[in-house]
Amino acid sequence: MRVKICGITNLEDALHAIEAGADALGFVFYPDSPRYIAPEDAKKIIAKLPPFIEKVALFVHETPETIRQICLETGCTLAQIHFEVTDDFYDTLHFPALKVIRAKNKEDVLKYSNEYRLVDAYCDVFGGAGKRLNIEWFEGIDCSKIILAGGLDPQNVATLQPYGFYGVDVSSGVEVSKGKKDPQKVKNFIQSAHR
Image 1 (cartoon, helix red, strand yellow):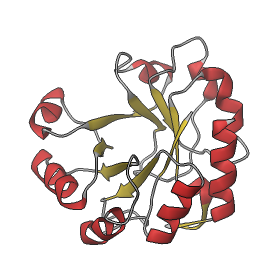
Image 2 (cartoon, rainbow, N blue to C red):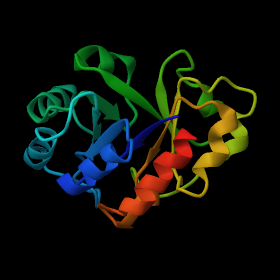
Image 3 (cartoon, rainbow, N blue to C red):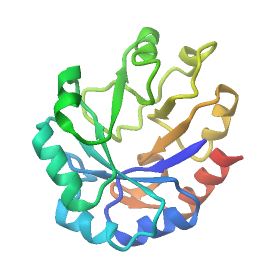
Image 4 (cartoon, one colour):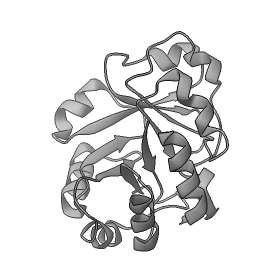
């Protein structure tokens, strides 16, 4: 399973996550999030990262123009669209994007089943609430294009191996406090996911 460490707010956490084996880092450009990072600060971090690491920009309620502009300015390589949009939205984005399904029921996890997508637990707030999805929803379905998020931590990530998820996305499950990662938890999480 590939691993994304989301909610990166400082260079130290970014470099440690990469050293521990992270495939992607997430930067939250949603001002209401406790893990929000200003685009200019993200740009400084991204400029110091090694090659071959996916830099994912998370957005809530932004226009395609704003999303594209921030991604290009910061050096992010993928936009994560964490809110409900129409297919036209992606057509006008003109930038690689990851669709997010905030699943309320089993049927939701089947949306966009022919595309790579991120599936998170639905909650009223956006991102990093630590709410876990019902894992039984994924039994008997092809999970090879699903990145699972929501309520993951170093203890439970290994239990996902039988499902064959493409990847996992963690934020609050590897933190000391909101926006600050615990190096040991990050390392343990990645090792468990890669087992």
